Amino acid sequence: MLKQAGLIVGAVVATGILFIAPALAGTPLLDKREHNQRERIVQGVRSGELTRPETRRLVHGQVNLRRMEARAKSDGEVTARERVRLQREANQQSRRIARQKHDQQVRN
Image (cartoon, rainbow, N blue to C red; front, side):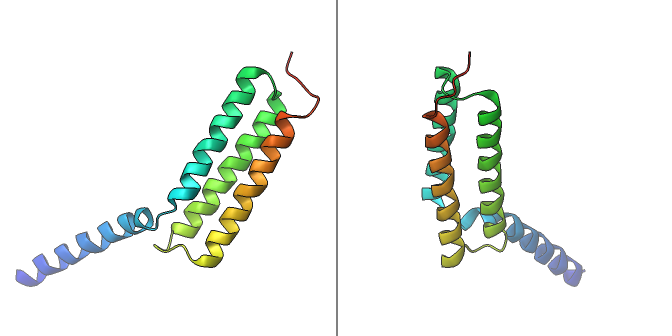
């Protein structure tokens, strides 16, 4: 009986760690950047600076960045190499947003 209870407790703890560990592998600066980039996209849509296809591409790029972040966090730790990759992708996304917002295309 005690053995079964110990196994159950162990399984619950292990399951909890699997769900909590990725959340503990924090990337607060990247999260803030993602939020700011989302706001820039929304502002571009509101002002008419972004066309629908541009918006779709930019949103898809943000989704890819979030996927990369989730993959980096999946093992519970974001390594220095993964942080560099994430920052590089966030920089590239930021440049894409700026380029699309300031090009000559406007939504009618």
